[in-house]
Length: 382
Image 1 (cartoon, rainbow, N blue to C red):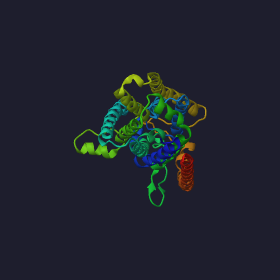
Image 2: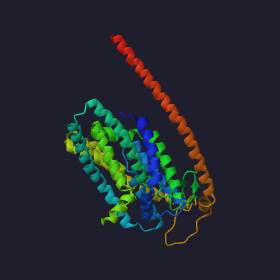
Image 3: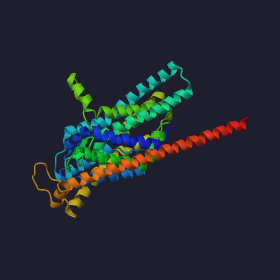
């Protein structure tokens, strides 16, 4: 069994990598849905979506961050009088429906393949479980990478049009403005994974339908494949080159996909052990989240603009200069923020290295204690 601590650390590292290396495609899609042109508006949208997510998570409901941020962007469009791009919204909504269905199909096909391999190879059960445990770690890392690549737009997509930073030279490589923002978002999500994701993990992993270890491996792999497909510009360009329509770069609801994968395996094995009550509560959360996020965003924008005097955005056709506060944040703060990010990365590298060394030493100590206990047990048995 993979412990929560190991799963959280692996997920955090690979989420950040996916966000920085492959997260720009879906961020561009959200920018087309509503291009938030003021930092005050970006922060308000993110805060409204975060409050919605926090409240839903408080009740252990796997809320879709995609739906929360899309609802917030539509709320901003209504408040500022901007047009919501119906074509982009249609693609996103279709992905909310197609994602769970594709995930269910992938999960069933992979589950059948794994079962056939297990029966054909006649491998010993203990060794098979050992392979499954290793596979869960590898597939979990791939899943975290795909999640970062696809869903980081939900965290930082609204900041990309309004926030511009100078390129950050890290000697080995250089991060542009959008990559710096995606990195900050990845670090924020990583902290949330480590500190506050246990309840939702328990709901997804245990309360919908009980899964075996191979079924869990299949579910994670199927979800990862769906998220990776909808965030890979390489696959989309390949489809165009061979004469197929491009794959839309849209932020897919990861919680919907994972529930679709679990439900697909549950239906394949027989619907008797599916907890439809929990499934109904999750579906209700999916309906409430975009509406609640949109309404909360609208009222928060009203207070930010009319009470605090913060520029939260204008119509795209209007050329209204930004307030002095916003301009100062966007221009003079560029260098300061980039320097902060640079030293933040240095600090994370140092503390991360210390943490890894400490973790390895602790694991070695536990292993030695376990060996001593086993030797003492067999000695007493003699």
